[in-house]
Amino acid sequence: MNRIPGALRWLALAVLAGCAAGAPGPDSGSAPAPRAGAAAGAALEVRYLANEGFLVDGAGRRVLVDALFGAGIPGYAAVAAQLRPALEGGEGDWGGVGLALATHDHPDHFDPGAAIRFLEANPEAVFVSTPQARARLGAGRPELAARFRAVLPAAGEVERLSIGGVEIAVLNLHHGHREPPVENLGFVVTLGGLRFLHFGDTEATLEDFEPYLPLLADPELALLPFWFLASEWRAAMVRDRIRPRWIVAAHTPLPTAPATYFARWSSYENLLRVMTAAFPDAILPPAAGESWTFRAGE
Image 1 (cartoon, rainbow, N blue to C red):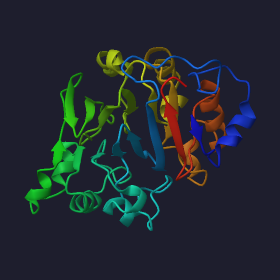
Image 2: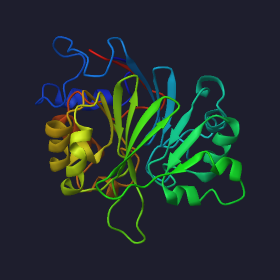
Image 3: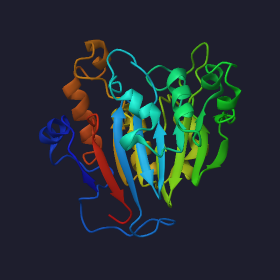
């Protein structure tokens, strides 16, 4: 894996270098064989945008996940305002995106205006999200609505999509038991035989995850919200049952976020210590624009 170090990753690694091992990293030991279904030399090119937003390239396809939103919410990173027009418009480095995914309809993951601008500028692209997100588009643009797939499988069930050469398994992973309920999707995306996971902001329990764990096992890459590294039972599930080869932790509050965001861990620095102790090879927290190449067999 080739990567540009994040601005803050050095802090966690310096504090806890030599802690107990978590998910194996590509720099440790001899290179493992490619996992079943992945051709030798296959790779995922990943660029971090903000919060839980990523651009993933593989096998000639480009996928955005939770990247098309606006100013977000206080305390968490947002895509820079000057970058959004190019991202939504498919300009320059952001061209050729055929699929955009949004896990749920919250302003730090999805914005209906951004989705409309993306679909207008990318006439072959498809957007996949929840019925709640789809309803935010309104009824005025039926030609765009036809390319917005609203998906919500029943709890414990999987809906499989094949869009432009990208295979997606869509999971129902709830965002906590709140009223009104917030629909939240998990995605298992396959590009060129390599799989990556994205769970959005799920607060699902271990019992909720049980029917999905066989499908989730042994991916190349997991793009996880930080609490999956900082919660004991979630970390154990990731380490022992999901077993991703590589992990990128996202949705970490900014160091300048209110102290209440870190109350459970006392401070931002202690949160980094907890995550690094559990997964010393994970990438956390990434910096905007940071990118990596994850290769099969490395």
